[in-house]
Image (tube, rainbow, N blue to C red; front, side, top):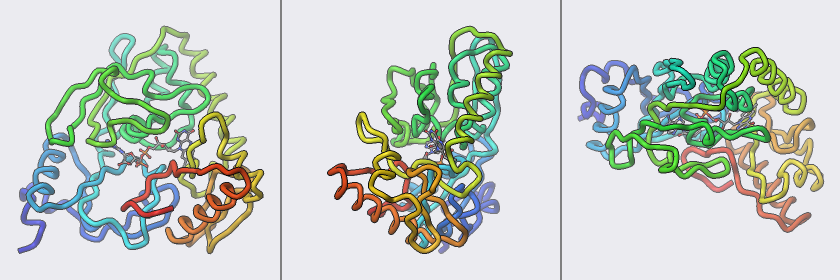
Length: 299
Ligand SMILES: Cc1cc2nc3c(=O)[nH]c(=O)nc-3n(C[C@H](O)[C@H](O)[C@H](O)COP(=O)(O)OP(=O)(O)OC[C@H]3O[C@@H](n4cnc5c(N)ncnc54)[C@H](O)[C@@H]3O)c2cc1C
């Protein structure tokens, strides 16, 4: 009996087998998802979870794929995409946003509604769910700061409502990676819409100027060690321009690994290992990956 029989017929017909994942990531590398489903709503998410549990099959949630490195051998189990769950609604000084909405849509909505703070996240690709899971941010803001509450599915498969203080937001990590974020209420201070839009535009432009934004990458490959810049350490270790296969350390920003075209995941992980080794030798610092590797492999 096929493993697909664990899924109710409503969703079974929409499940793709051996779906290439590379096009769903900004790095554009990696193999196929064994099974792939685009959820249309909470019912699909619950059905998928239930079926995966019954079939003892792993489930992975993909957002905008902007922080993912998919192994060349692909991903066993079900990859669930929430991009159709993308509602955004303003009520007063708050925004209710679904996990599949683009982070940049949330940023623009907040700025337009005069909600100050989230404009500091301008230019970060990906979805709201991914941003909350990763506590996305940079020098101007981190998304965790603006969270009022989140609705998620817990690792025990319960739908639960969490206030911000119940969520562990850390540097490029949050406790939400253990479950599935469905939606969030985002707030901020009261601001002037025109000024906030202008600030968002400037912050986005600043990112475009210093990062290889149009190249295929997964953003910063490594986390910044405490009090240090990974990009600077990589640069000082002489890694800019280092290449393995078709993966290269960007000349523009040392912490970006770019796919020159046709790079494999092995090229990328091989290059990341080389960079780690050089930084360890040059500075005695151990870099750890920021990019999420599916399924987990050593980098
Ligand atoms: C050019 C470029 C610039 C970038 N600049 C920045 C930056 O300035 N700051 C920054 O923080 N990041 C940056 N990134 C990295 C990336 O954009 C962020 O980490 C982003 O928040 C990831 O969101 P995503 O939807 O693409 O997540 P994905 O890459 O799809 O997934 C990342 C992780 O989040 C999990 N996830 C996704 N959706 C959900 C959900 N609904 N519930 C639970 N878990 C979920 C996934 O399972 C995975 O573990 C950059 C990337 C690129 C390509």
